Image 1 (tube, each protein chain N blue to C red):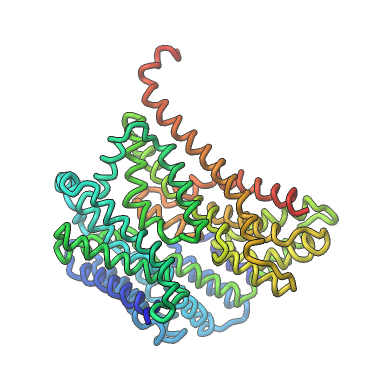
Image 2: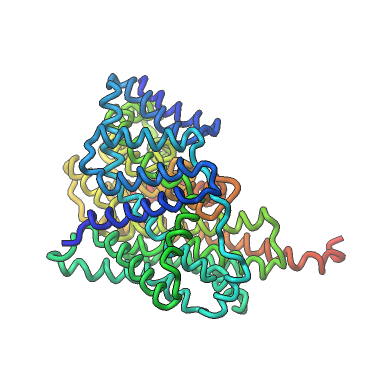
Length: 230
Length: 312
């Protein structure tokens, strides 16, 4: 029971806004000690896992390319392209990206897009430009909200597309785990059941994008129709 | 044969360059902290396999000590002036998108093609290998066509890396915490607690406990993969599949997706939720999580309903 103290440390530490790296180390130490491990074993277990997980940090090698392109005006060009497009609204733009991300992830192409590769250089500036165009001007809070929606849309598209693919990690994990219990399933029998949720995710998140779209457009119309409303 | 080791060499070189640029930048009062942090990341990429488990652990402690006690700073903004960028954007036009799309296009082509050449490429790692190749290709095109100065990608990349800061290693840190949790048997204890919370003899109660448990435990662990075996052992297998005779494929597939709803709602899933907030330079580091909650909760309810109606 005492090993659950590590979870308490995480929750309280994040809640009190201590530096997350310190919170994680404290949680690892508390959990390990509660389980009767000595410090050497805890540090070794942590170090081994850190080394095994290095592939997670490989994605940062895209930053020099993104930095170079941004120095040559990529974000400005992305904004220019959207403000020149008739009918480009934030709702349509992000809903299209959501569909594209779900469809490519369902084909197993999870790494072709992502926050460093596509959201920061392309999707976020385009969404900002579209929002700016349809609302007239953006407050700092709205700009922040639009950017958060760009990132959120990438996550929703990835999470609720990738499991349709047969050979993705989570499908293989399920197959392996069920085998341990003596249940043999083909990946296809599992991945097919990701489709209903994928459709629901598109409808729910798409509906929220439509609401955001409507709210920003209404803002532009508000000064003109202000008299009618009163 | 091209394996992940080559990609680690490249990543180490990038981190080493970020460290050097920081070391030379006197506009950052904490430049030694930044240089040491990214320098240690370079060491990890290059020599991680030779350091041993305990050595890597000490390296992590050093990283945490630098970042956790305010050792990281930011250089004075060396961003390119807006007017210059506007002028360049007009000059190079949509070709800039072409270069940006080289990375995803190479990743796509590599993922599909490299599998056909198992003698040349490590087929299990084709995506990361082709991502690295896409980066090199895009840089080459940038040097030739845009005539970027040799240092520009690295100095601008350093600026972006420093704006992400310590959040860059959070995903790796959380994965490691998960390993310590597994070693300490946290999952079994949580499973036991949840088992006691289910009302006896209620199928709906068991399905709801399974779906909510997947989401909540994923929020704590930051990762649905860690929650899944625990919830299957605690509720999925003994109750839903054995006692109530549910379809294992549906229970597992949709149960995992209920966990993904939890991923949308937790700062513990740093690479999806905190890193983009840093990358987009948002003021509120939890802005992405907060935006996702209103999608995640209805979708979680849909998933629980889908399990209840489809699996039984």
